[in-house]
Length: 411
Image (cartoon, rainbow, N blue to C red; front, top):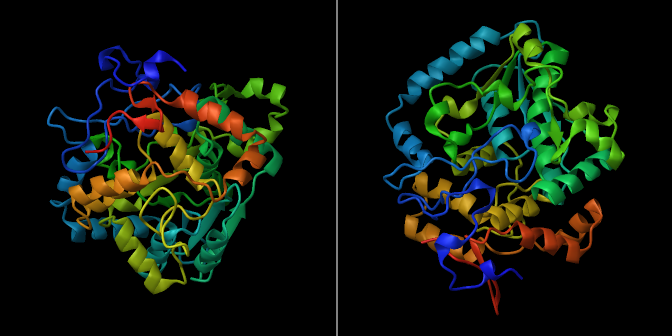
């Protein structure tokens, strides 16, 4: 073990991986740390170092909390009128679909599609990029979504190729969820082009949780997240340039589902990708209450999800837990923190309660589907821990006789 992981080292001399800030700061209002990465296009990531930390002001308050304060000044009745006008712009009266709603059957996708159909009179086509492997509750909730009366198309990528890309994403980026994230954002744009449905409604703008304030004035998603600027643009999947994936048995043909459409084609078709959170007061817990009223959606039957205290989010995929645990290894923050920052901002828990919940649950290992994950990407448990431990940044983690400990626990 490298000496820089030992306790008692001068922290100014410790390496901060991934370009993260050397000094760990927790937001004064919520419990998010300044180590949280901002969202950027997945298909441009060459390595795990290709990140940009979330924005914190000198006042010690994260941008997401500032956005939360800004939301209190918004005239939500006016925003609802804006949504009505947007729907009128794309509304069809010939029975054809007039909006695409991407989703997995989770609470947020049910919320968006149901509201658009039943409160705004739209005719949504819901589209789903299949998870790596459905959990039982995930499959049940997917069926519950369909029973709300929506048409749904599920796209399932070649499972052999998907597993190979997931393996590369874990080994190279320590982000096994990347292939799913790629498909989830690109699929809606592809279907919009295919079916000539220029209106796409996503759920939340990431400014709700961790992105900068730059995006809050518009309801539109930046097309860099779901389209390629030019045909010869260098694209990376699992941290490997597309042309180099042949050495892993992945051909250009295999990558078709993961390739983003061209920006020029998106613009010619007049496709607009909007965030529902711009038009309605977005609250994960309120969304949960809404879908419990309008559907058979069920929360985690085990009472809470591993790594957190909540029971209703990210239930669909057997590797959901690994998505959050790899974030914990790289950035020192996991699933409980992801939930607590939202619940604090929405007033469901205090900051003190959030600190306690994060320290109690954030480092819990997701053991339920661990063997499935190892088998799925074809690695041993020893290889897994080597990747995880190598991903730990010395300025965040230290190795003690009791195991790995955060140098700066949530406070």
